[in-house]
Amino acid sequence: MADLSAFPITKRWPAKNPDIIQLYSLQTPNGVKVSVALEELGLAYEPHYISFAANEQKSPEFESLNPNGRIPAIIDPNGPDGKPIGLFESGAILLYLAEKIGRLIPADAAGRYECIQWVFFQMAGIGPMLGQFGHFYKSAADKVANNSYPVERYRDESKRLLGVLEGRLKGRQWIMGDQYTIADITTFTWVRGADIFYGGREILEYAKFPAVSDWLERCITRPASARGLNIPVKPE
Image 1 (cartoon, rainbow, N blue to C red):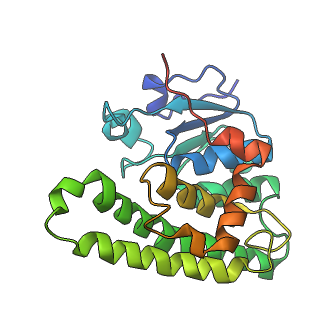
Image 2 (tube, rainbow, N blue to C red):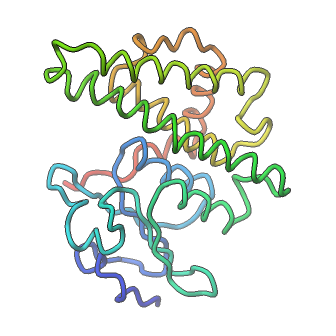
């Protein structure tokens, strides 16, 4: 049985099975990236629900794994050289899992880097811009009721980025063509999230991006990805 005692987070969220990947997350656009990837890869894992309402992501135990206090994070008891490894940042986790199993990323070097660049496109653009749009459009709407600039700025930049994605997806089933990869996973969770969490489908004019809309539907109807979107479940 793996010894995870070096990770203080396991004191607050004990591992029932320390021999499998431990996932610390929530059903947010960033959080579900990892559960979707784990489901797609068929890896055994144990999800732990991190409550934003209780500010658990800022607890000393959680920050011992991710000092930035953000979900998701994982512990893999079977890391490099057979030693446990803890990781945070969703993009880094996706890359680690894909390379660990040899799936969800092209095998050739050129394809691998092309895939990684689209992962970074999401991390640097799609996620932050859609997140800021959602914050001002919904979460902080009362604070900017007399100032339309924040919503307009992030709406317009989000639409521009969706246009970039539209251009990439025209004539392609997935971002990398015929292969579903971590580039799709990291991106569709945010395009979906801007709709279901922020109600942004109309104001962001998803209808003007038919390739994106069709791709999003393909992503969310994949059985494994659909399962991952509902993990972790809030404990009763």
